[in-house]
Amino acid sequence: MTVKKDGLFIVFEGGDGAGKSTQSARLAQWLTSQGYAVRTTFEPGDTSLGATVRKLVLHSDVPVSPRAETLLYAVDKAQHVEDVIKPALGAGLVVISDRYVDSTIAYQGAGRVLSIDQVSAIAWWAVADLVPDLTVLMDVSVEEGVGSKRRHDRMEASGADFHERVRGHLLELASAAPERYLVVNGRAPKDEVTGLIRDRVDELLRSDTHTVSHES
Image (cartoon, rainbow, N blue to C red; front, side, top):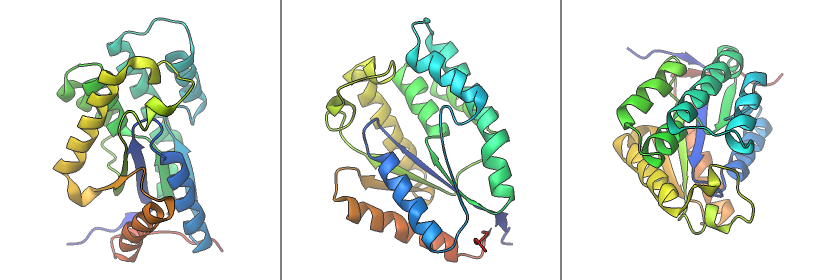
């Protein structure tokens, strides 16, 4: 039996500098032009509480241990789902989020060398097991991504080995559930990447398992 779901939940993941923001913005613009109601969002920081977490973890001089970092990101995710994602999906919107659970598993689990199973359990509990309909993984080498940035926040400054572990685990997550992921080369021509993403999203929108609102 097919179960209909309100809204459509799309997540963009990938290393720093992979092009997530560019492609998520392009997707939102296209969907809006097609008449769909869209809510764009991001993690960490797109709630009042989340903004405080983001500043503390990424831009302050306050020491944060790997375990504390994991729990702080879980706080951001729990509030984000409660305040932003669930209400938008309930209203039938297409929700596009720049980062979600996979980032915590890859960055705090693989990157900080904590237990993947424990970090995963914390992150999924925080979001009440709300799974995206599609995760677009923008894949680039560490050198092409975060290595090309001139200024770094605390996470970006964690070193090449850290970011290699993050990239490797994101690819592992995608490989384990190909029906829910689209892996694209973040350094391919932008229009080519945009087209691949649109085609995959269009398939989801044409399915009979989602009820998605249109702008009047």
